Figure 1: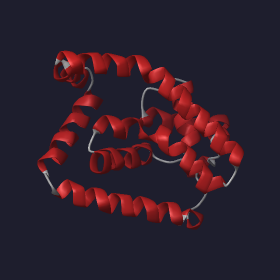
Figure 2: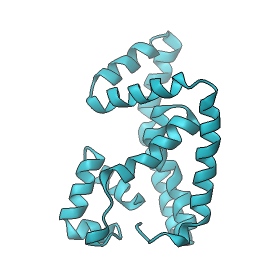
Figure 3: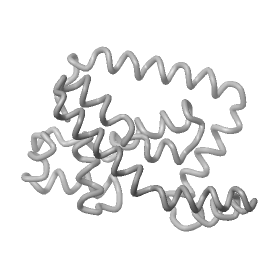
Figure 4: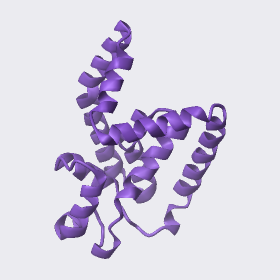
Length: 172
């Protein structure tokens, strides 16, 4: 699945839905991501893990949106036990961090100037995806201290899943 996320950014696929359709229609792309034609995942599978982590564990939707990059090395290490994949995914993570530096600088600048909220409102207004993410973030923020309990439960589920990866079919 992480290869598919890398493919999404390399081929500039705009959404997880389009990525799912691409993998179902393009046998070469599906094979490159180690998917069998009948076993390609739905678009929702790509986003659920990121959203759960971002909303309940990190408490920030933006972290949930980009968290796949940071989980990729861990995933490859546990899933394949191959050091080459781990190093490859670590390099992808470093490249992502380097490419995101201008955006981080812009956000830091706006935070210092007290204009971060305006910038984020403009970002949320720019697309339906961001508006939906904002609504989810607002709903989770209303939970208050219950969010921490849900965060602990999500971390526990993630740990259990990583410990029992051999029980699941190899979809990566």
